[in-house]
Amino acid sequence: MTASKITERDFGPQPIIDIMAEHELSAHDLVAASTEHLTHKMVARACKGRRLTVNSRNKVRNALGKATDKEYKNKDLFTY
Image 1: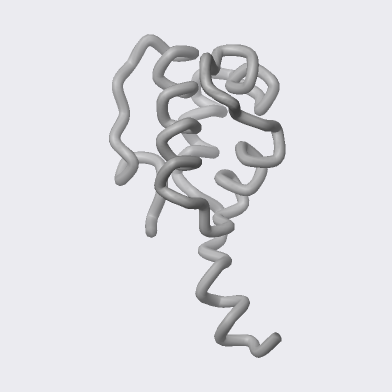
Image 2 (image 1 turned 180 degrees about the vertical axis):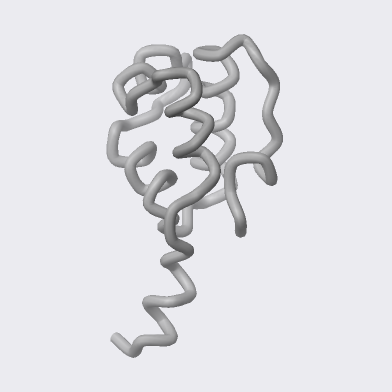
């Protein structure tokens, strides 16, 4: 795999990390709050900046919203 292929999928740490830290939430807290099929791996990939599908990003966003009682948009959590 070439470096450009890796760069396309890896966007570095995402704003979701700061929001989770602000609310003292762990990946497990988001998985527990989710009513959809959300895995710890999805949350970890979201925080690391690995490209997620729109569906996966929405699941992470919805779980964060339930855990914090706030409404977020994908652009608040992800830089891509």
